[in-house]
Amino acid sequence: MLDLLIPSFLRPDSASVQAAKVDAIFIGLLLISSAILLVVIGLVVTFAIRFRRGSAAKRGALPNIVSREFEIGWTAATLFVFVFWWAASIEIGAYSAPKNAIEIHVVGKQWMWKTQGPSGTREINELHVPVGAPVRLLLTSQDVIHAFYVPAFRLKRDALPYQQTETWFQATKTGTYHLLCTEYCGTDHSRMLGRVIVMEPQDYARWLTRQPERDGLADLGERLFSERGCSGCHAAGSKVHAPSLAGIWGQSVPLEGGRTASVDEAYIRDSILQPQRDVVAGYEPIMPSYEGKLSDGEIQALTAYLRHGTDRFDLIGSLNLAPADNICAPGQTPQDGTANQTLRSPALVPGAPVSGETPQ
Ligand code: HEC
Ligand SMILES: [Cu+2]
Image 1 (cartoon, rainbow, N blue to C red):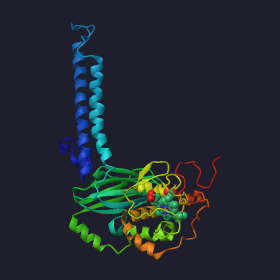
Image 2: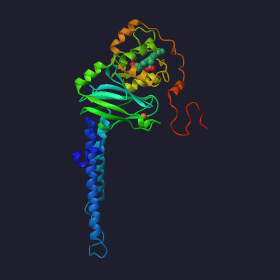
Image 3: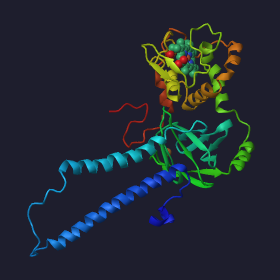
Image 4: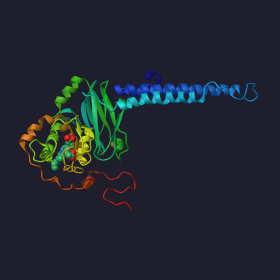
């Protein structure tokens, strides 16, 4: 259908489940607008001929065929309910990856894409994925706003500093596809190019085994968990009254004030950066904020650990690690987030103050 309407050299390949859906919306909208355009042009031409000067056509008030309300309702129904609902449902679908999806962490950075896949495979400006398998992307940025864009997958999601966004795709065709940054992010924005390589599952498996042995993200998280002193409070056997984090992923946690929260990326991120915001019921708000003390990559690693590695908690508990001394002791106020400034790259807006300078 798309091939009939638009020759293939005028559009990117269509290589994912999402691409087919987006193309269907595109064709749908194109057909609806073309039909409306034809009707309007047809009427303009017909009326121009029929009511031209000097013609004997009947002029005057129109008979009331349909009521105004009916007309408004009908237009609104097609436009909003049908088109908007249809298009929006596909956009919303981009947020909920299937449970069995391969998880890939993506970090945007001036000017490159760093990706980290299962079993710790790390790549720069490249992403290898198997065909036919859902792939969940968890995106963040180390400096400014970037946007992860794979035209052939009709996939576009912002990568924001201090936040995690997510999306997913399922490739349907093997091949090599462009990966672009579609948010103007500085001088070399246009060179922030990468490739997504979609492989047959057996080739992908072979590629995975050829990758150098690396610590997985969860392993890095496990190390950080003790190095940064988390285990000093959270490990089993700790003297501090802090909740155990073993198996909390996906659970719902009762909070102070009667609310509950379900444990996901955002909740863990908030718990680490703004621990005073959602305090777990029955605990003192003594956890220090790690704002400016942990990079986004480190938070991703800790999150991966809390998600996948919590079965190893007992091991940490049995090591009985003391809290590291680089963190706040209970009762001390955490330092403010000035350390954040070092992460920031110079302002990109011409004339805007560079970090450290005070605006006039
Ligand atoms: C000084 C002790 C202490 C340290 C150090 C500490 N925490 Fe906590 N943490 C707590 C306490 C107490 C709570 C419960 C009260 C609250 O929610 O603020 C908590 C809550 C949490 C929660 C929410 C738990 C739940 O059951 O919902 C998470 C997640 C968490 N901490 C992760 C971490 C991570 C990751 C680190 C290391 C970067 C860390 N904590 C360091 C004491 C600590
Ligand atoms: Cu960019």
